[in-house]
Image (cartoon, rainbow, N blue to C red; front, side):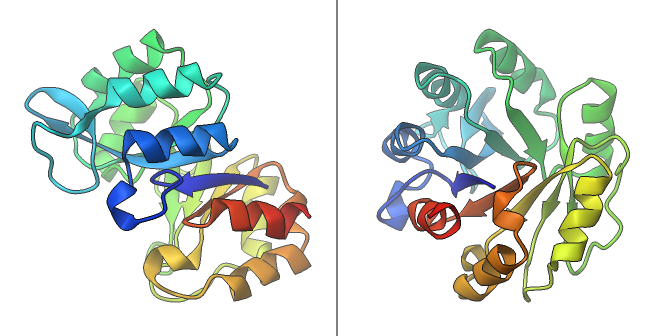
Length: 209
């Protein structure tokens, strides 16, 4: 299992999606999930509506390249129409290990058409992922309950998909019961599986001890 940090490796919520949290995540060997949207004609890193002070996505990709460029980037697409801003940056910084997710279905069609790597999503409310065949993987979210079972993960892996699991603490629920379920099922040994978590160091110790 590959561990990716949720908005970087931060110690306080205010540090999320900041250069310090991004650098820490890469220095510790973790890939990262982060949020992209547009602001005043720029592609920026921000979960919420952004202003001119938002970190430019170019800086995210520069830090990624400086760390070796081999760690997974999960790019949460927060607005439609970002492809024209995103593609040149991916090419300029030679970002290979990435996937985009959470875009609207019409936008996902455009990502597929233009050959940008994307994951479709599945949750307890979205049990039929859109564009499944074309997607490189599945973002498995647990919005209100821990519903994911090992058979769900194995089904997607058998179909040739990568699987990114949302750890329950991202939605303010305890994470250890879910982690224990994964470890008991042997999911922690699967390279096709990623875990997005606010506790990447603890997850590495838990699954890789």
